[in-house]
Length: 388
Image 1 (spheres, rainbow, N blue to C red):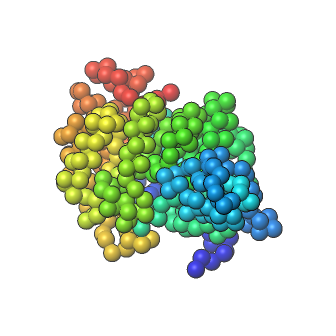
Image 2 (cartoon, helix red, strand yellow):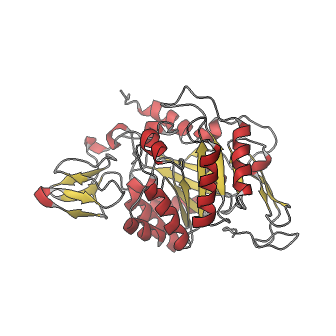
Image 3 (cartoon, rainbow, N blue to C red):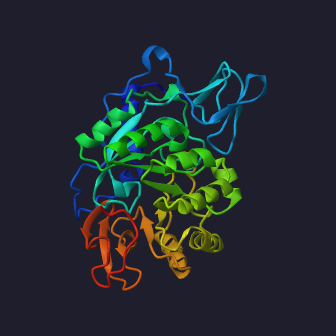
């Protein structure tokens, strides 16, 4: 049972939204130029009068018997009157479909863009990062379960319209707005409206997603987003079904479509001991990325830490992450990273041609950037990414 204590939740959400950073030791080498996990929102407040705001959903259609069919994620939930879809944030009211979380974030922070993680998007800058409650997956290793694995009534939220999000990003000189922490697909209307408003202001919106989305909403979002990071949970349907409550194929289709539409994309694989760390699976995953997405797409192999429903497994051994990186490099991937291991050389960016160090990182802080107008200073190879 979830306790409805706003002060406790504010504290927990500040910690949980920065779970990756919180689990890392203080390496004592450098300090970022801005505060990590800096909470910017007001004290979280419950929805006025206990009633959640209704905003018309964008992707759905009417079906028989007063039901609606959701057109957002591949579940295609058929929802009866006064019922909700599986994500818990969309409701049928008299044959019309509504989202309950538009303009109602539950957390907002100023983060390093490397925390998302994006290593090829404006390194060393801050990203205004927000989330609403809910998710369309049920990952057993969810880091932000207190806000992701709940319904909107169970997580205090505050009103923040898209134009107010953009104004806040400008106030803090953040060149990007990140929709992250929970699953942006389930608040896609809010993502779209933020991104459209931000684009007019010269600010990019980046989305950190599980990629479980249908083609139409994906195409609509591609039209306004600046970059996407996809969590590729594993490379087996078994893992997706048993550990995440989802499916692999739609995620692979999303990655293919992002590449086809030339959307800047990075991929993260959380390597969980004994569950998705087999050599054959890692090799197949690397070959998929090389053949279907591109050898120049950055991929991050990230360290798992026990929590939520998986507490019986140890943190991922560093040697396992190094093995995953070696396999990916051997399969021809050019930008392969190790995440959640501060100070590891796998945090850095190297030129795939001459092997020179290009960007040095310690944890989530960039400490050195040698790129010259997006190129290697030694061999002048153009490095793919968003650098300015």
